[in-house]
Image 1: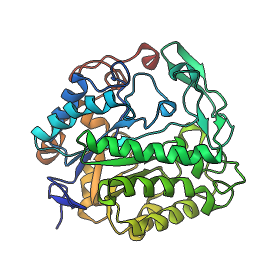
Image 2: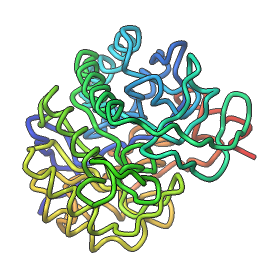
Image 3: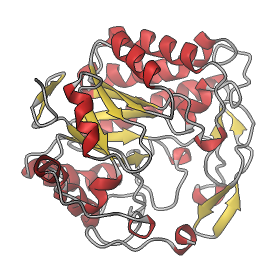
Image 4: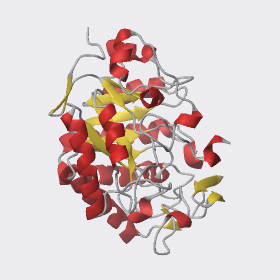
Length: 355
């Protein structure tokens, strides 16, 4: 019987176990969106994960949606990530960079040179957003032109090449959580009438073209995709979840990607199992749970539901999580006040996020 503690070959990258560290926004970037020594310490401490997937890294300046998040679109940023990947590799770890363009989720005060958030359509998400100037209402994004859509796809490919130059083992394309790619997938945020909107085939086009461009740039075996079917973050409302995601997975299945990473919402396990059958490569699952993903999720590898399980919250307070899972605990608890900011072992949250 296969267990979560067995190694696995990820399209040519050998993982020591089947426990992945899920991507989690940390907001610790230095000046110019660079990775710092603190970032290197944080990821190196968690190198016993079979695979580390980094926090979201913006592929372009306009792709930034949160304060103090890092990028992979400048020479300085690329250089700064080398100390991170080097520290992880020195401890025997494997690390993929998650490329995250937040699209309409963000605010102009976060962006340089008068830029404003962009999206598939000029439709604002509901709610307010944390910025260095306090909470601000989300704005109506500028609709990308057809030419700009193509340029954005190229930005992902360039950032992927930069990731490999920075020493990453591969790249995860973030197509989940209400950010730009999911904004194209969902009909309530994508009202386009050109080749990028309307029908299911058109709405999945941006996601598939981004994945193809990244795979062409760095190799399919170093490319993964994260999706979150039925996720409502960022005011996403999918009316045809099953049709959308089966079509998307069918479109990428022949590419030979390293993995598909599914972030489950409540009540979609049947769809998860269907997508697993449709996708011929490794399936990483971040399962839906009532609280932080715990030891019980390891059984999803044993019963074949997934090949790898990704853990988020538990990795914050338990850098040596694979060993603790194998021993059955004990587990340190992570709460809201330990999630963002501060040191790699002791965290200080932003006041606006603790209130």
